Amino acid sequence: MPRAAELIGAEKATVLAILPAEWGKPQVRDPLSGLNTAPLPEPQRGQLANGTALVQLDLPNAPVVCLDFWCRAGSGVEAPEESGIAHFLEHMVFKGSRALQAGEFDQRIEALGGNSNAATGFDDVHYHVLIPPEACAEALGLLTDLVLQPRLDHADFDMERQVVLEELAQSEDQPEEVAFQQLLRQSCLNHAYGKPILGERDALLSHTPEAMAAFHGRHYRADRCCLSVAGPLAALQLDEQLSRSALAGLQASKGDARPTPLQFAPGEDRLELPRLEAARLLMAWPLPGAADQMSVVGGDLLTTLLAEGRRSRLVERLREQLRLVESIDLDLNVLESGCLVLLEAVCEPEHLSAVRAEINAVLLELQQEIPSDAEMDRARRLVGNGYRFSLEAPSAVAAMVGNSALWDRKHNLQAPLDWLNEWDSQRLVKEVIPQLQPQHAFVLEAVPA
Image (cartoon, rainbow, N blue to C red; front, side):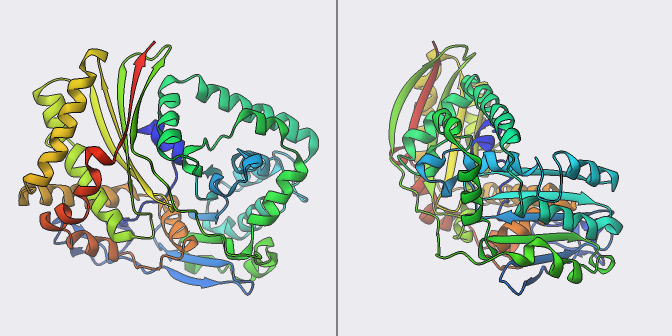
């Protein structure tokens, strides 16, 4: 469901993550999947003298290093008048620092054989660099200087504002994205998750470099940041570079700003949208936040059982048997204040009522007919293998361990597979299935105008 992922911040790291076998040896057989997999390396956790978290993962056979800087400065911490400023700041960071001119960072990173990117979500923002090991120390200095000492030039600010406004206009011009944003806005009430990460137009027009500098100064603090490094650590020797970097100069924040719990409201609505090519039934449910890692695993298993592959219950019933939908997707979006399960069924407008009735019937059946052992085994295998195969590069590994360290989750890399094996049908029926019932959902019917 790419549109939903974009709306919540596509780079959010998931709870489960396993490294591919080729990054370690000797191999052992995993009882869940039957695959030969490598022992999982243990992240090395620490912190700088000022309290900034540091997590490193040794991947001795990886050809590149990923430096991933994370900060608890997503759109969720914005004041009402700051709407969109977190994402706008991500853009402005790449316009230069006190020591780097606009475009110089990218030029120097590319000259070293690397590349960079960034992403802003509801909960956090991160900036990462992929670089050859021999250039890692120089890249670290460039990255931390760029992110922590942005120049925020007035002329660049006005130019980049137009880029952000154009990005917002493109989003507003996509009827599917408008529908998803409406679903979030109505179901999440006044919470940040119901507001667009890109921001509101009026607020974007009123932002100033001074206001952005104040936002940066409040949130890019030692206790709200983390640096993650994944790659061949023996070749790096970054201690001296870290001690001289802008990261070491960060001050601690003045208060403990924890995520505001999600307030979710079940309900329903109908939306007519010009240029929408097919009708969509959108549904949303709340689940406990990312801190409840065991609940996240259960939610992932249930959404997989319901809508992953032709043999899943919703796909088999609505697409394969009844042919009521073009597609149906159900995704668990892992967020700090409260996870969101989002469903999208694409169909003809005249089939909306039947599609909704069948979805409700499948959900109710789950409470009455416990999933079979075969269904549970299939779901566990898909979830476990999906996470294994999703992390095939140092950038994905660095994102996973960096996000976990940022939010004080210190489980080892084997723990998620152990949690996965603790779920059976009885536990799923008792703890998760009741939360994904029709009466707990917000339902939005989006139809062509």
